Length: 456
Image 1 (cartoon, rainbow, N blue to C red):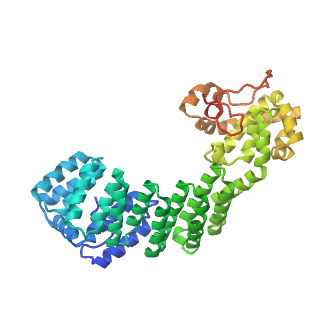
Image 2 (image 1 turned 135 degrees about the vertical axis):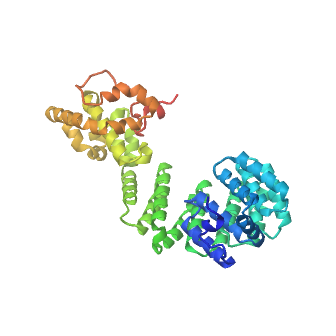
Image 3 (image 1 turned 180 degrees about the vertical axis):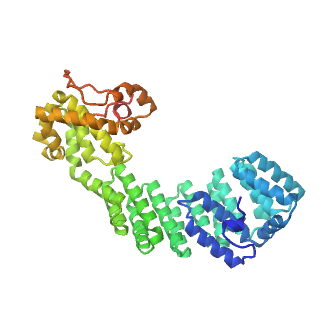
């Protein structure tokens, strides 16, 4: 278990300025949006060591080779190991023996909150802020406890008090913004972060704030507002190698999410911004391609889906060439390739059921037909079709484990026999196309029928 000096990578004789510098350095290394646990430990270490009284008490406990020191360390260990009741018993006993110990009260309140005893934690934090009204850390702890309890207005007041005492602490600004969000006050939440940008001047701090602004806009579905902080993020990332990859990845994830919501114009703008940071990033290029493809074909694809003379097998085949992976329910390109192979195998085995549908596709939707033209042209030739069946049979073993992974455990039981026989067979003729619960949905979503249109 690291002590607070070790967390900040400081010697025990560090000055107050050393502690502050170490805190900002650590926050840059472990920003809260990516390292929540590490950030919380850094913040706790800073708040204890930056205050003269709590630091003095912490130092005295650590220096004492006594039961007090041992019990305090044991309580922290129990807390980290989630043995919270054991930690509470030790700390309650220590508090009885020394009711003035601020450092014990701080840890006891933290354990109470972690143990879902928010009422008891609040009482301790209120005592601490009463004893030390100028301690920004205690004001911040109280604000966090109010927020945890769902008392948003009290949390807002407490955060404002804490910020008055320590405006450099980015976690207090984030907490105040969150309290406004929880109280459904969108503009106030944004205004807090805009104000924080005037105070927090380092690049990593600004990055965190811009990301939080985007999150708030997304949560309130204010999509038109997300582009300004994104532009700022891109400016920062282009000039800072440390955050380039993180921001590029974040913007790619955001573009994918917006694609899923069918907000393609917003997704296109964002992925183009990501490309400004790292133009050759594989994920960025993939998403750019998916968006361009989608926007080119989606109107015709939707019309085709509604065409009753186009069967679901044909729609599903085209879907793999039009819809993005997330809309298809695919995790990656490998899974998409395997499921496309699975669907093509099904069409190969039952071509007589699909040939009229494919002819209709070629006549009325030539641009969509062109996406699979090579495959379709071979289908119409008996010799080529038989060659393909042999080839697909050879390849099926390479894809079988991925196809099985696509189905959940319940599906695997239902499909066990079918997946074992996942290889081209002689075509069967039936009067009409029958949809199995685990077949790809006829709507073209790429999902299983029972989890899409076949839901009860």
